[in-house]
Image 1 (cartoon, one colour):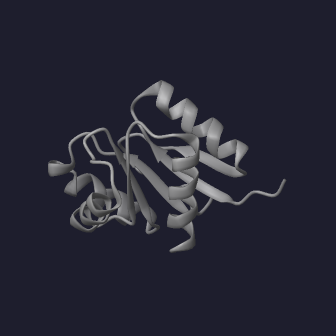
Image 2 (cartoon, one colour):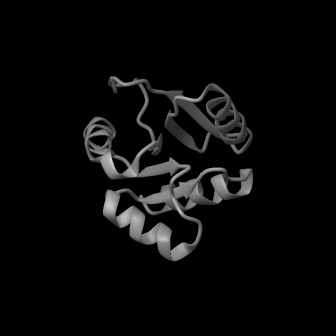
Length: 120
């Protein structure tokens, strides 16, 4: 299978990070993990997936990610509401490509990733 692209994942929870890595890997994506520092990598990612624990104070984190990678950002949070209307408004407010409420299914993650990568 050919690689569909690289995705940077910023997720502090080990179990969720491992699940995302497995699901993305099975779907044909390469996964890179980033901690608090966003160093330049040898590959150019297609997307950043970032946990946003508190959307009301995520501005600085999102700015740092945008400056480091210059690719679409898919924000994940347990504080996001379900439903298309809330997702669009939240994504616009955070200045990210898409948002995905936790918990999410494999299918929801892959649809969100596919949409965000296609919008690039």
